[in-house]
Length: 300
Ligand code: NAP
Image (cartoon, rainbow, N blue to C red; front, side, top):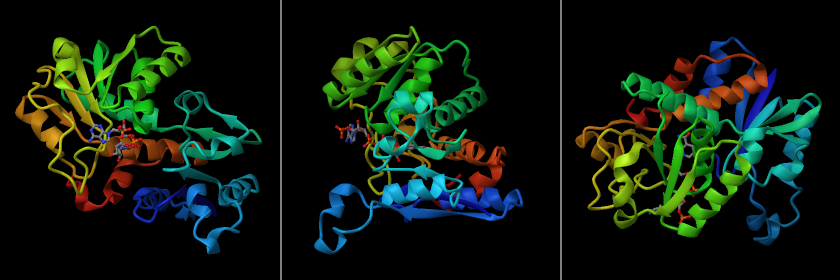
């Protein structure tokens, strides 16, 4: 019996159980993937009746060590919180500073990050399908400097892209530049600026790829776009929006209207899940079954 789960808070709306349970079923494997809600420490101090709860993260980690759970995914707000519980951290996860997949490997409780390879795999497929030459790389513009930006910057810089991070908080973007410049072996330059028309206009023509890692445009506030007003999108770029709900964000519509090929983040979501499944079971799950398990709200 394969027991898998997702730790996070809240996790009740996650579509990960749908994807993983569909993969288990399609492969004829006996098992279940469940949401495992783990309250963040900040909330555990309040109210009183929650104060004496056992350390739930430690409990889940022990369940993996004992073999009761084969592995777990980790989501917000625990992607960093789990780090002190691990014996080993795979290189991507260590450099990104966040873990989204855990299991026992060679007798060690090990953390992985499948967001970076999941993003790069899907990006490559989507760019190729749109007729873009992925081997030529060039300059990529990343909007936002939060958690998912870290995985995207890691993936792009390792793949040879010159990455420019544009964020509303310039010091957050500069912190990412410093971190990845030191941590990554790549020689590709990483730069940063404010996410506004004035800062981006002088360099906009050089970008061959634009990646949105901000939540701007996500359901329910679908009428917003992170793209600065008054700035034209770079004509020959590919646009990748990590948001998958709605399937077509305002940014994707803006890109298509400007003649750009564009993709939402559903493929990344499926790919990072599939890579985690493969880490736990050693079996490559059928992507099409996992995609089909995602609810209709994405309007595939
Ligand atoms: P996060 O850690 O909160 O980072 C969000 C970033 O966006 C921060 O830099 C934040 O800046 C910036 N931001 C927020 N509101 C903004 C605004 N109005 N204008 C400009 N910048 C703004 O979030 P995350 O975990 O990276 O997730 C971001 C999005 O990616 C979400 O929609 C999530 O669903 C999606 N995502 C998709 C996948 C996938 O598999 N497809 C995976 C991961 C994430 P401040 O720090 O200044 O607020």
